[in-house]
Image (cartoon, rainbow, N blue to C red; front, side, top):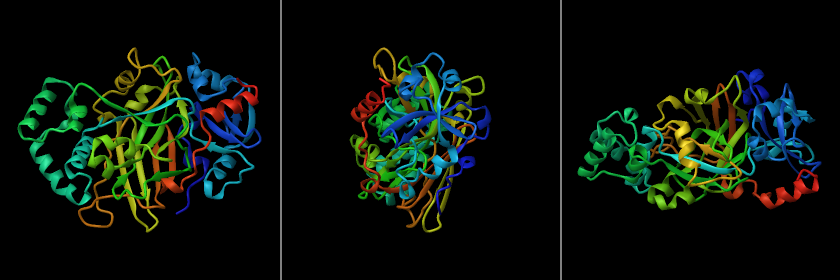
Length: 391
């Protein structure tokens, strides 16, 4: 199944009202530019905001995006068609992940369903064939509608004590229903890949899955300025063996996907749209397999604004801002090949994450060692911007 490179596939349903900003690689400039979608054209607005970080630090990012003078660099359809790495013409522009200097953070265990799956991973010690029996035992022992529990409340603490008494307490339940959210570093700045890029899993992982999420974009003040779609690719076997392997489970080459654009908050789009969003997921396998799922943001246990406040503030500053994956309630458990072993990726899977207000983010699964090498980092960006007279 080929990737869909059409603009209709990528864009929000109300794209005519959306303020959409991203990044594109310009071979003629040997570097990336901040771009805005204006009608059918991609317009370079780097003269007004040299980096996406700079744009998000502006008092009114959406207004600047709409009003800034810019240089058209091609039709959106043309950039999309040139973005998949296997068929790219390196002499023409292509789309990139829409962030640059921002820290890439992620909140974990923010939905009840995914919380239970993290506990199961831990109990199974990374062995997928043990998951089904543990899942049944856990659900029987808890017997609660966890989605209704407010983390840190008296009811949540009573459930914690109940599980401790049964010998079933877990560090994942601690961050799922306890007072403190789990927030971790997903990837280094500039390591994210974008729409139509390859996403990576480790070749030595046998149990892994996509995580369809909304990612908030925050300025250094903590102000939330917009949102995008994200895939927080996860290796369940590594994290299940030990939570101390979280870095290895989460941070690999091409393991953080974001895009296609950042939709900036304006009169037509706000945090309330995120709170009520439904995120759809499809996985289309090379053998004809198809997986469908969804994550409803109104089922999240911690409000998105609270998660941002837990990430940035007087105790932890990010002078270049951040993007924050909000977590997912989707945890695939249906068997793909072997009975009792649930879902895991195969090389060649096409993963598509969709939202009516944010568009679609689609990627092809490869081994991380086979993904495009990440070679253009912060130093290269600074040298390129200086050469172009933008800093």
